[in-house]
Image (cartoon, rainbow, N blue to C red):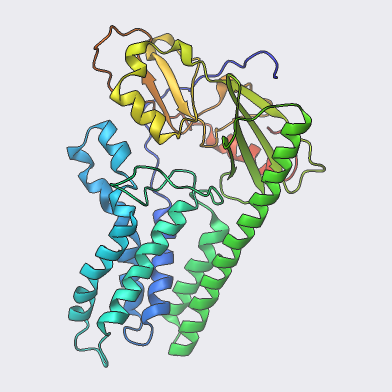
Length: 372
């Protein structure tokens, strides 16, 4: 199958929270959708409503202080991002929007207010579904995380047309000009999403062909082709094989369709039974959709378990896999008596070298296979 298993670990550093940078995208999309829906009845104030409603679903984090780490992992992108929340949220917001603008000439009808609020809310959820994180559309009846993996959580080429469109809509004088520039921004961002699906499909075909050519037997339905940071040119493939996973990359700018796959052993046997049976580990297995692996890490930090769906950071040319940084990893005890309460402890990822890492990503996007 593969050469000797690669030894990898998750570097540990002081806690460095990842900022919610995708909030800019959510706010811009919300403003663009709101202006497209309400430009006649609300005018420029529609942009402000869009910013507010476009970020509303992510306010589920406000209850984090009352939840333990397991509860937070389950709660985020859960009920607040469900199909039912879209409808109920719009029903609750429509009367408020009508009341605030009751003196507008003319005020929005209930149908107009509801439709706009629903489209803003649902567009937020939709672009979350485009990412690899997982969005619980059917919560609380099902906790399955839906993800199409065609966009990275931050992609400037998707966000910039939206931002430019709403900024011009805010400053241009004539209503028609404001409407047209905003719709153009929406159209460009939507076209970029369409391109991402085409690019993803092509990359998935190449990965599947390379795996078959090399004789790797992939578990049925256990493969993910996902966008890499900030672009839709370089694609990442994660495939489950016997005993572990294969990770490979292909760029549209590569000279050919050859793909080098790195093998990451699952190493499930390293986890004590008490850990495997714990609520904390069950939550990690659920969240990662079973794409997890036990990593080689410093002994004092226990056994790191990483969610392999998220792109690792490989800092420096030719960096060995035991120095990769994983965005989502948790520490579990290497030994635990039966019945032990196992806590969920997230390992803060060390992105201190992310500048060099993104330089390597840029080189790999351009087809330089020596970068990764």
